[in-house]
Structure formats: structure tokens, C-alpha cells
Length: 304
Image (tube, rainbow, N blue to C red; front, top):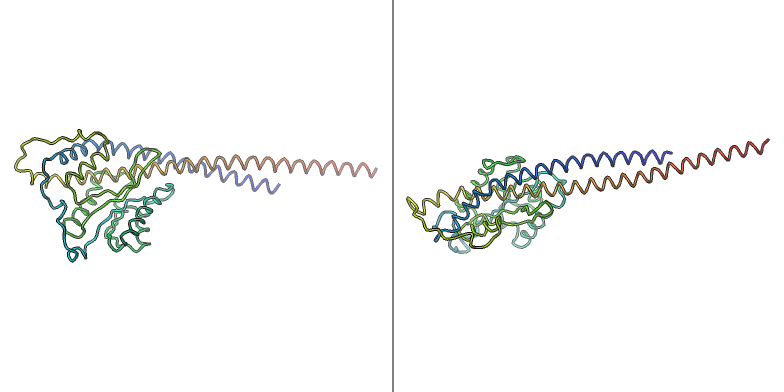
């Protein structure tokens, strides 16, 4: 009977685990929907901004434009900056592992000394620290679970300043991109330098369609095109980063939802399997007790 008690305790534990993982699944579902809705709400402005910048007949040179080729002596002290976007917590399946795998390939290919790192997410910070990467900024504590546009702007300003101050040759963002509830893709997005071609690439990345969606514009811009683009570019870059981070958060919540659903199903299956073992053990115990009673009655009958 002690074996049956042990099995019953394991059944109780499996059912409690199932309740916890089911609650986490529902929470992740709600968070994913809210984050995806926020991304969709911000998308019309971003598409209009990207479409306008990509359709300029000639992109004026700005402090965020590609720089002319420089000699090895000029580039020896400068690095590429990567913003690594991960989660703060685990229990989200292979979400963080997929990002770390992509980052590991980048490090192996060029060497970690060629990069500076900005991290958003405690998991990413630990990974970079483990590989002795140079972390120049940590935004893990600054971004809430549901970031707003104002929450993202300091990060975008930091990335723009690092590039415009010539601290880094290039600024990239490594993150997961939400495709659907069942799918996400790890992508390295080129954030800076920026030009009309890059704006067009980002436009089609978030709104797949035909090239006819972007048409050259014929308009009079006052006071001049250069000053307008120089003042408008930071807003467009902020919106791009906002979309990338919201997409990453949506992918994180979707991955956690699927992982928790799988854990709930496994816990239920384990509880059902243990219940069968419990009934078998209980039946064996009852059979043994009945057998002992019958044997005792037979021995008493023989004594008379």
C-alpha cells in the first residue's frame, strides 16, 4: 500500500504542475495578443515613413548615411555594435537558444573582439558575459513587459549617437521576428548606416508585396530636402526599432505559450499514466489482502 501512496503523491504533483503551466500558457496568450496588437497599431505610420524615405529620388547624405571607405588604420579601433534582444526569463522553449546559436556563429566567424554589445534581456547579458564580450549598454531593467514608443526612444537615441560619434562602423540588431503563433525567425537587422535601399528592404520585410508599392515622389519640399530628411530620420529610426522590439516580444510570448501548452499536455499524460499505475498497485494490494484472508480462513478450518 505504501507504493500506491507514493504514486498518488506523484499524481497530485503532476496535476499541480499542469495547473501552473496552464496558467502560464493563458498569461502568455494574452500578452502575445496585446503585443501583436500594439505592433499592428504602430505599423501604418511606420509604413508611410518608410515608403516616403524609400521613394525619394535621391537620398541626401546625413550623419546616418553609409560612410566612404576608410583605411585599415582608421578602422582598427572601431567595432560593430550589436543590440542583442532576448528574454529576461526562461520557460519559453528554444527562443533564447536560437538567438544564442545565431550570435555564436557571428562570434566564431569574426571574433568577439570585433564587436561591442548592447543587450536587452537578462539571458542575453549572461550569454555575452560568459563569452567575455564587451557590453557597452544594458537595457534589461529599462524596458517594461509592454513597451511603449517612449520606452524605446532612449535605446534608439543611444544607437544613433554611437554611430554618429564614430564609435562604431555599423549598428545591427539581433532578435527573433514574429511570423505567426507557431513560427518565428531569428534575424540580424542592419540598423545603421541607413539609406533609401535599406528603408525599402525594411518596408518589404514587414509588408510583403510588389515593388509597385513604392513609387518615386514628385513634390516640392521646403525649406530643402536635406534638412527635412535630417530632422525626420530619427523619428523613422525610432519607429523601426519599436517595430523590431515589439515583434521580438510577440515571438517570445508565442514561444512561451507553446512551451507551456506542451508542458501542460505532458503533465496531464503523466498524471493519466500514474493513475493507471495507481489503480494497478491498489488492485494488487487488494488481491493480496483477500488472498491472505482466504489463506487464514483455510488454515483455521483445517485446525478444526
